[in-house]
Length: 86
Image (cartoon, rainbow, N blue to C red; front, side):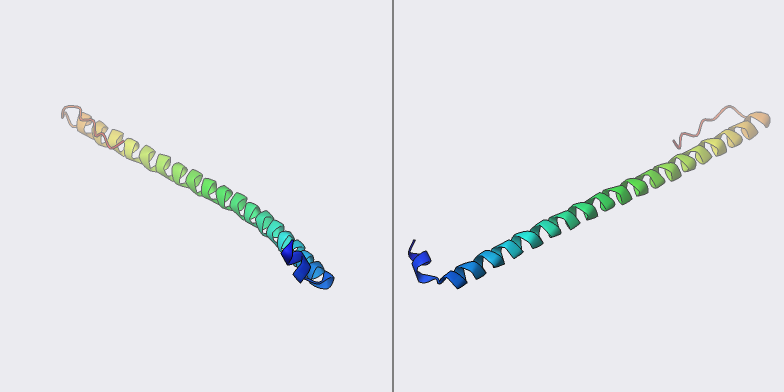
């Protein structure tokens, strides 16, 4: 109450306008932050998917190579050997 007595109507109006401006900027900032977070999550998911595909291709190639090596050993008369790289 004492503060109200010490401020003029013009000062109070300026204070209200300033607070309204701060609230408006905060809402805009929050909206921008939310959009950026969504883009970030989408980019991380895309990268994780890409890495997962690369890993599965790599593991498939390792398995195929292991099969080729085992086939060659079997063809040459050696005992079966399973290379567990997977």
